[in-house]
Length: 570
Image 1: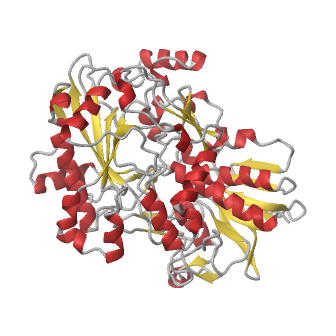
Image 2: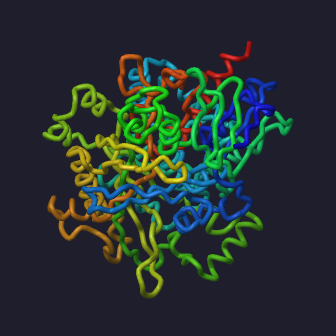
Image 3: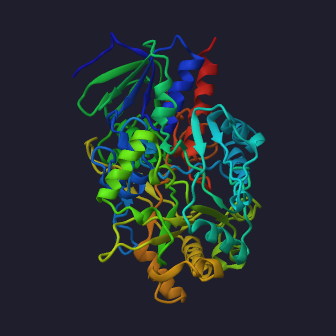
C-alpha cells in the first residue's frame, strides 16, 4: 500500500465539479500559503467538443469517458425502469454535460433553507449577493419585439464573476410563438427568472460565453495561479476517508494509495458519491454498516437518506415546415460535422445559440392546494409550498429531441417537458458491496408520493392545453408522443412510461441543526462527530431548490471556501 505521508497537504478536496472547483479556487485565494490537493476520478478532457452546447442534447449518454453512466435500481412507479442517472466524469464534473441552465432559485426557497439550518448565510439577501460575485452576466441587446421577454435588471446581477451567463443572440422561429402562447394561456411573462421571483415564463439563460459551454474547470480551475500550491490529480478515485482518533487525516484510493491532510478533508463528490464514500469510511447508519461488516466510525443515520430529485417527462410534437429547431442538424450528419467545424473556427453557426433558444416557466397551480394530496403534507411544508415565489412545476418548451429521431425523412420537432418541483418522494443511496469499484445502489423512489403523482399529472394536462393555444397550434403539424387521452388514467400511464430524472440528485448528506436526527453536517458543512471532515456539494441541501441547481452547487463551494478560510486565516 502506497503511503505519501512525506507529501502531506493542508487540504484535500475530493471532486472537481462546481462545488469542489469553486471551493478549491476560493481556498487558494483566501489562504494563499495553503497547500491543496484536488482529486478527480475522471480525466482532464481536452476535446473541443465538450464546449459546444449542441452535443449536450445529442451525445450526453454516448460520451465515453465523460459520463459515469449510473442507473437507478428498478423504480416501482415507473414500470420497473432503471432510470438513467447521468453524472459528469472529468475535471468540471457534471458541468461538462449538463443542460447549462443558470437559475438562482426562489427567494422563499433560500429563506426556508436558512430556517431549516438555522443559518442566516442561506437567506436570500446573502445568497443573492453571493450569486452576484459568481456570475458574469452578458445581458442581451435585443432591439426588436424580443426585448419584452428578456430584460434582466443589471443591478441584481454580477458582471465580473468567473461564471459567464448569456442569452441566445438568435432565436429559433418557434420561440416567439411560444412566448405569445404563454401570454394567451394566462401565464405571466417573467423577463428576469433570476430576480428571486422565478414565477412566470421567460427565456432560459445559459452558462456560456460566445456560445461556448462554461464549466467549473474553465470558470475556476483554469484561473488558478499555477504557483504549485494547488495540485490536481485526475484518475484518482477515492474509496474512503482515513479517520484516526475521531479525526479525518487523509483519503485512500480504490487502488490502495493514501494521501494525507494536515488540516481538513472535504468531500465534493456529489449527491450520489459523497454518501457512498462516507459509508465506505464507516460513517453512516450503524445497522447498515454492521450488516456489511464495516467498522462503525460514526453512527450518522442520515448518510444516504433524504435523496431528492426533480423528474420530468417529455411531450413531443412535429412542427410544420419552416419552423427551424436544433433538430435541423441530424446527429451524425455531414451538416453536423460542418457546423462543428464552423463553431470551432469562429464560434458562429447553429451551435452558438442552440441551448439558449428555449423557454422556461416556473409555474404555480393554486388548485392543487385544495386537494387531499396537498392537505396530507405536514403543515410547515404546506406553508412553504404556498409562498409566492415557490413554483409547483416547471415548463421547458422549445427543446430539441432528447432521444434519437423516429425513422423516416428528417422532420422538425418540438419538445415540451413538465418538471416536478418540490418533490415529496424521498430515496436512498446505499452500498451494494464493500468493493469501492461497485456503484452504490441509487433508489430515488420516483413518484412514490401521491403529491408527486398529482403534480406530474396536472403539469402534463397543462402542457397539452398550452400546446393547443392559438400561437402554438399554428406551428404544430401533429402530435408525436402524447397521452392517449386527457383522462387521469391515461395521463398517469403516459407519465410512468416517459418519466426521466433531471439529474438534480441532492439531500443525501443533509445540513441541519443538532436536534435533527438525520442531519449529517452542520451549518459550517462539518460532518457531525468527525473532526477535520466536511461535505460541500448538493448533497448537503436539506430540501432541493426549485431550480436547475448548478448555480446552487457553485454557491455552496464559495460559501464553504469562505467558512474554511475564516477558520485558518489567522
